[in-house]
Image (tube, rainbow, N blue to C red; front, side):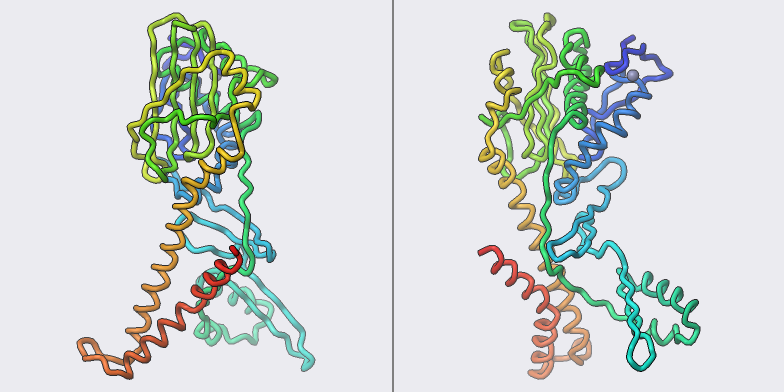
Amino acid sequence: MSNCWICSATIDAANDTREHLIPNSIGGRKKVSGFICVSCNSDAGQTWDAELARQLQPLSTLFNVQRERGTVPPLRVETTAGEKLTIRPGEPLLHTHPEFKETPLPSGQRLLEIRARSIDEAKGMIKGLKKNYPQIDEDDLISQLKVVETYPEGVFHHKIQFGGAVSGRSIVKSCAALAASLEIPPDNCQFAIDYLRDPNGEPCFGYYNETELVTGRVAGVPMNCLAVKADPADGLVLAYVEYFGAQRVVACLGDGYSGEPKSSVYCFDPRSGQELPVSVSLTFSKADIDQIYDYQKISPEGMKTAFDAVVGPAVAESHKREQDRVLERAVEKAFASCGAEEGEILTQEHLRKIAGTVFEEMAPHLMHRLRRIDGAK
Ligand SMILES: [Zn+2]
């Protein structure tokens, strides 16, 4: 028998639920029972966890988080040139909406232009136009449809927000969930309980990057990490949370612990869900904790270093994937269209054609890269 850490209702077989230690949205798999009731699980998921997922979505997209359930939802961005784009992890960018333009011509005719995101969508749009313009030759238009790939004119910026009262409760709930899985009683985690139960409760966490608390970190891995340590020597129940290797938080769940010393770590690579064998050093005094809550143990340089360590390799990897995709397609198309039969020895003329097609197919990508290098200067 236990009580819900959020609403204090008695948890029994009827309302028990398995709660993710780290939310499913960012790749968490491990769960705990007897922690919160089914109704609090649902409410917290739709509010606290949803806000945390929203704040972390640019990172979930960049790292292509492998969820146990569902996939990362598409991320919508607007570029500096006003283009509205949709990003799906591991896929090329798409325009968020199809486009339709109708221009009257001096001759009295009308010019209709459509830009769809797929051949099927274009077919649907042509069918729709046919209703207003019965004179349209639908089959002729469909036979002329062409797939064109372009790169955005502008660039887009991700504003990474993190923290606040709503997602802060998701962070503390994760810490409390790991404490519950260690059978640390909620009575010894009164700071966490007060914060989770009272909408005006004092936050019991702060941002931290003064020192490296993780031993066994693998460079470039955007790990999600959760750790709890309960020590009867000082009574403190301390916790550490890290999202994507970049956002780092220390929490103090309570200060009256008197049981056996306990600690646990749950750490995984969100790109695969694979657990990582790290340890976390939590040796803060109450005075240290006060300084952490007062933003004295976090520096912008430290945050930038942590971000660069995981985001840099991921961006480079995504550029390489795009280059491989374009090159492979260009080579395939060049061989198919050079006029040589299968098994035939290639002539100079074939090779000239192949080189020409490869260059033509790769030109938009190369130009885009040159522009990017130029822009970075
Ligand atoms: Zn509850």
